[in-house]
Length: 152
Image (cartoon, rainbow, N blue to C red):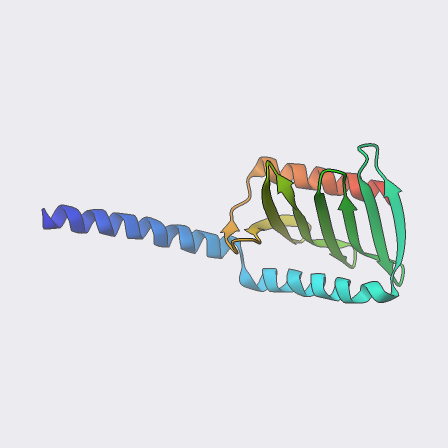
């Protein structure tokens, strides 16, 4: 009986450690730190930035911020209490944040990019890192393309 309990505990803990290791590998802390640095730099540069406002066919208001002629941030809002913040450096996307309320519950999520590919997602309310699903990644990339086309 003790052997069965021990094997069960070992099996469960191995699964937890494997998942933690997997998450740690896919959500590289150095890459996330770099993305957060880009976000902070972009936010700090907004004082000197120029902006372009666009209303998309969906009714979403989009503001693109440029510093020294380079895109540093896109901010969107809609009439349903949803917003997005996207941060750039040297023509590359680093962070895509989405927040708002859905079915009465608050959400705030961030997708991190490396070499223009999503490598990690974070639930900013809980702090948990999540392996992003391919379908979700495709939706984020499609949205990003739509926004970039609207400000060019």
